[in-house]
Image: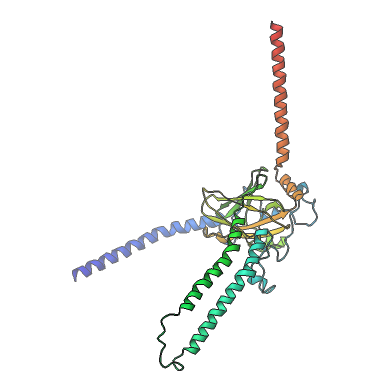
Length: 360
């Protein structure tokens, strides 16, 4: 009895203490939420740092005619249904399968899914369903008042062991081929793009060109004005050339993110303190959308990815518009500087020799 009263008093004391802590912490929590709201952390607004990136409304207008933008570069217009999800009302079949693929690995993976995996899955499902119906009808109580005493069947046991092995081998060959292709090493002359995940936006670095940009989600008004899908459009796209190898490196500055673009069959984790790398070759020009695919916090759904694939000429114009330099220009500049330094050294040596001869 006394023990029960003691436990009851202890429980009452713990509840009172918790209530006091909640009362004290409530104003601080409200203050923290108010500060986060003032800092622009509302769930329907992209986390734009105005000191680092321009507002989405300041992005140059999209046009099909090259050369209208600064430095001869104009952003591409997105193609409806290309590189983006498709609404069920627009195309029911396309909205229930993979997006169209624009890389060799993506085309191979889509072929493997449609030609090998889907038929195998369909056949196995229908076969098992037929066996269930057969067993339910053939071995029901009314048709078999006396249960069978059969314990095993050697032929059936051999079949259900060998057939799954054959199926796995058939699936394994293209699976391993696709896996090996996805781990192919980029060549030395591949263009390097480093994608850095932040809470909650992306940063893109081009070490070969001296360019670094920050990419935030565009507002709904800016996306509608540019004809882009809401919550997938960004203020600064990751611009890359088509038809050439790209060395895409991913890392993160805070928590684990994932860089994923479905239409390019590309998904790679961005882990703090680790640099993952994979080769990417895009076959067609266009704008391809993706999102972070690793749960990275409350604004995980608001850090989209937009990859703009353009011709090499347009890519070089984009680099110039961002104040970057091309590798060949840098190499020529370095060669000129080296030649000038060598000439200056030769002149200094000649002057030293003349001074020595004059002194003698």
